[in-house]
Image (tube, rainbow over all chains, first blue to last red; front, side, top):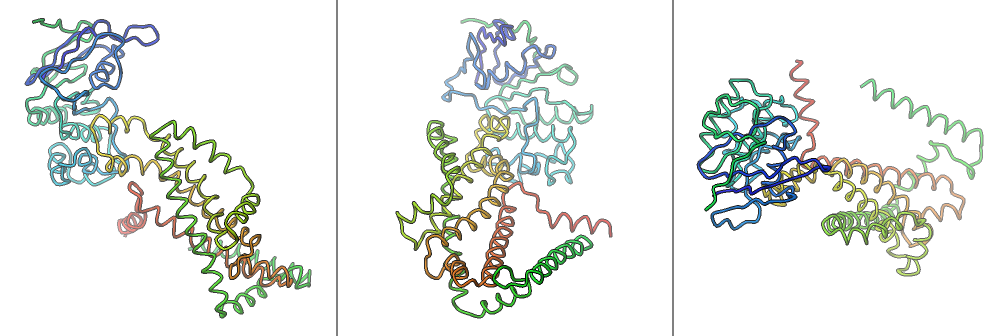
Length: 201
Length: 259
C-alpha cells in the first residue's frame, strides 16, 4: 500500500508544528524521519494513525485500502507496556493469532531468556524498549511506524534490533524517527522541516 | 511472629479493660464482660435457631451484595461507554448514596414487606459504591495504554484482561471492603427495624426486649466475625484478578534465595 501525506498542517496554540507537510510512504521502502525535538515528528505519526486530526490537508491510504484507519505496528515514543505482565504476555496480547510460544521466540532474538517471564516493570529501560519493538513487529500491520525506537539501547543492541526489524518487516513501508542515521543507510532520509514533494499523476 | 505476639497482646489488653469495666459496673443489664459474652455465645451455638438465624440473614445480605456488585459494575461499564447514560445514572447513584439508610429501610418495608428486607437493603447500599468506584477506576485508566489498544485493534477480552482490570483492582479493593462492611451493618439494622422472624436482627431485638445484654453482645460478636470472614475471603478472591502480584510464591522464593 501507499500512504500519502498531502499538505498537512497542524497548529498548537497558533504555532505551526507542521506546515504544508508532504511525503509518501510506499511498500518495500524504509524511511528515516529526522528533525530537532519538538519539530512535529510525533505529531505526524499521530496524524498518520488517525489519533490527531490535521488542521488542513489529509492523509490518503492508496491502493484499495478498505479500512478507515491504517493497521500499524507502532513503537510509541513511550514504551506503553502493560506493567504487571511479562514480556511474553505483552507481545502475545496484541493478536489472537499470536501464541505465547511464537511471542517468546520473537523476543528471544533481542532479549535474554530469563527476562521474558518477569513483569515488564522490573526490566531496564533498554529491555522495555526492545519488548516494544518486538511487539510492534508482531502486530498484524500494513505499515510500521517507529518513534525513536532505539532510545536507551547501546550500539550492539541497536544493531541487533535493526537487523531484526529488517528481517521481520516484510514488504510494508517502514518509518523510523530518530537523530542518528548510524546503521540506517537503507532508509530514505526525510527532513520533517521540508518533507518530500508529491509526484503528481 | 513478634508482630503477631504484639497484636495479640494489645487485643488481650482491651479485653481485660472490657472485663474490668464490666466488673466495676457490676450490672448485667448495663454491660457484661467478655467472659460472660463467650458463655452466652456457647449457649447459643448449640441451638438450631442460632444457625437458622445466621443462614437467614447471611444469604439475603450476601445475595444482595452479589447482585448489587454485578449490576453496579455492569452499569458503570455501560455508563462509561455511553456517556449520556452515565450522565443520567451518576446523579441518581449520588443521591442514593446520601439518603439515610433508615429512610430507605422504612420505604422498602412498605414496598416489599419484612421478609426480604435485608436483601434489598444490602442491594441498595452496595450498588452506588460499586458503580462509583468502577466509574472512577475506568476514568483513571491509563489513556496511553487505551490508545495503544485502539491502534493495535486489541480485542475487548484482551483489553479487559491486560489494561482495564489491572487498572480497576485498586479501586475495587477499597470499594469491596467498604461495601462488605456497610452491607452487614445496614442489613442487620434493617432487620432490627423490619423484624423478619428467624433473622439476626430479630434476635438482636429480642435481646433488647428481654434486656439480655449478654445475648446482644454475643450476636454482635457473631456479626463482626461473619463480616470479617467474608471480607477476608473476598480480598483473597480479588487477588485472582489479572495483574495482581501473587504474593505467596514470591516471598517463598526470597526465603529460598537467602537459604
